[in-house]
Length: 423
Image (tube, rainbow, N blue to C red; front, side, top):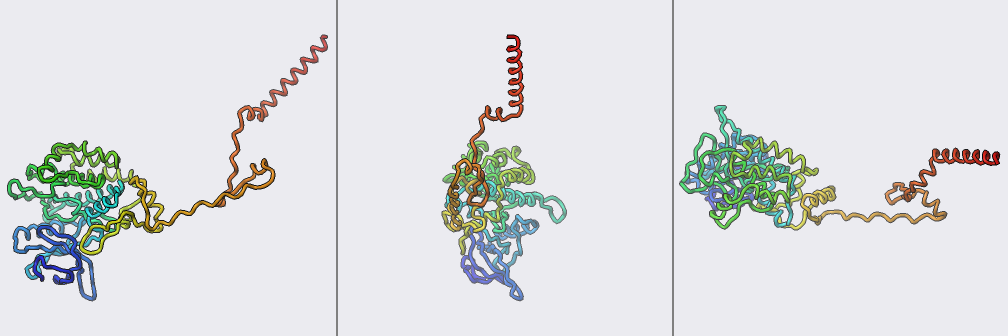
């Protein structure tokens, strides 16, 4: 096995061949690899390679993540295939997800100047909540409830499958209900832009509401296009967390995706008691919202529009326009214009043909021509619209009107004869 920090494309770790580096953190690298088996078997996998296998703390954290995820089996959780020690190097073989990260997708949309459609935001949110519902209700080998709190949710840890699923990964900081956090005073675990307010005080009471706040922060970023908490340093982020309210943060969402605002605002409440108390509860409400904002699209088709860069980076290619499948061009033009409010330039769109000109007016008597049916370029018959008939003409055409007029004439005639007789 090559020395840590010297892995390169083509290296073999047991039956795994490294193809491209997908990402790198402080403790590990993640590679796209191919698993080679007997009889020509090949399967794409993601390998997390520990940089320093002599660091007991990092090894324990990696093994803890593998143990926790191995107890979960759900389509929205990135699965673990195996943990192995190859010539002193520790690695975890994981399910390979072919659509990059949610962070990469958000970066691409920002560069293209597009807003993520509300229906896609709701789909991704539902997938994340389904994964958390499974983790928060995990059961140990003894059959007892052992909730798994992620504690490090962020767009970089949400993987996007081009088959139309969002999958939660990286449970490296996850803690079960029977574990306690052992950390130095003042050390903050997690990503500051996404951690809940109670974590800033060093709370050791790990509850599902912590992850639910982070889901709200992720959905906020999907809608608005920028992080919920920003600043030059920890102190700046800290002040934003406690100076603003969830209602203030909901104002831009009300303008961009009003249907999602109530759910996101409740997820972002600073008091955990004011948030949803379970992922299942939040999922139920978000599914109702998704049914209202769904305009006939799905995440599978949306992901097919996003070109991905080959090689080590999971960031989508830079492109100012969207590539749409030919048979759905018009459908997606309408969809994206309705949800983003932008005129979308389509690369593969077939130009619309101008409508055929109307046939020349028929010759002959104009009054007869007005009554004659004409045809349009589509072959459908259309009668020329006549001006509305005045009310007095309609009354004259009524049989009752003529009966009254006749009776009046008879009465007048009889009166005239009677007058002449007397004279």
